[in-house]
Structure formats: structure tokens, C-alpha cells
Length: 228
Image (cartoon, rainbow, N blue to C red; front, top):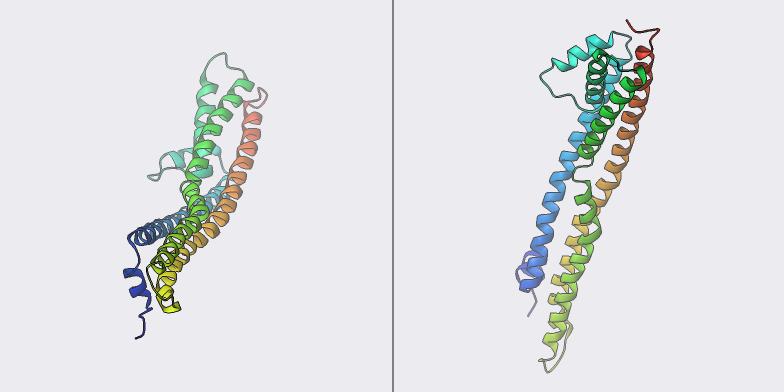
């Protein structure tokens, strides 16, 4: 009599603990893939927004005009545009205050831009910690299901008068499915985490470089000899 070793039959024939492990890994994998696609879309939008803003900023136009265009836009300013908007707004506000020296004006604008940069960094890194956790723990969760399934298979041999391969093969096969599912959840998460971490780091460096360059421009504008 042949034993049904089809994928579906093995899953349905697994023990309760192994089924729970498989269900957990399946759910984690689905959530992981959802976050992978969302992070990809968010990072693409951030990169395109940075490219577009840099083109507008370095086009040589008036910064006040650029600020008013960004402030009047229906879309919320993100990335470099958000840093620029916050810094220019604070710069203009401090310049209007009587008795505020040029250095304090620039430093105040820099502090505000640093706060926005920190917030942008947090937004870019959203869900990356979850992907890292999935990538590092899923194989061990799958291995737990495998060990449990194999343990049950060999424990069943203790009540058998004659041990045969056909008796333990289904149990071992269904247990190994848990390991496979653990790897299926972990590998995409690890690849996505490494790729997105690199993209986020590059974007943050671009933001930080822009912040320093814009601070230099504000310093020149705040200089008494150049102020209006």
C-alpha cells in the first residue's frame, strides 16, 4: 500500500504544533511581502521626489519663490523639500526678530532641519526592523517545527514492532516542510532588508549633504553685508 506524500496531504497530516508553525510562517511571509512592496514604492517615491527637488533647487531661481511653491502645494513636502521648507521658514522667522545675530539665525534653521531630517529617517526606515526580524528568526521557527515533527515520528516507532522507512517517511517529510516555509519567509526578507537599507542610507546621505549645502547658502544670506 503506497503512502500519499503529496504536499497538501503532508500538511494536513502534520501534528497540531507543526500546523501552527506552518500557519505562523505563512502569515509572517504574507505580511513580509506586503511590507516589501510598500517599502519599495515608498523608496521609489522618495528618490523621485529628491531628484525633482534638486533640479528645481539648483536651477538658480529665487529661494523665496521656491518656498512659496512648496508651501502652497496640496501635497505634503517630504524629503529634501520638507527639510528646505522647514529650514527656510525658520530662517525667515528668526531674521525678522530684532536683536537676533546672523549666527543664531543660521543655527536655529539648522536645528529645525535636523529635526525634520530625523523624522524623514524614521519614515524611510519604517518596517525595516520587521524584515530584519523575519529574516533572522523564521529559519529557527521552521526548524522548531521540523524538530517537533521528527520527534513525533520517532516517538511513534517506539510502539511499533517493526520499524520501516515507510512509517517515518511521511512524518519526516511533513516536518521538513516547516523548514522550507521558514526559508521561504526568511530569504526574501533578508534580501529586501539589505537592499532597502542601502537605499535608505544613500537617501539619508543625500538629505544630509543638501542640509549642509543649504546651511552654507543661508549663512551667506544671513551675513550682514548681504542682507537686504
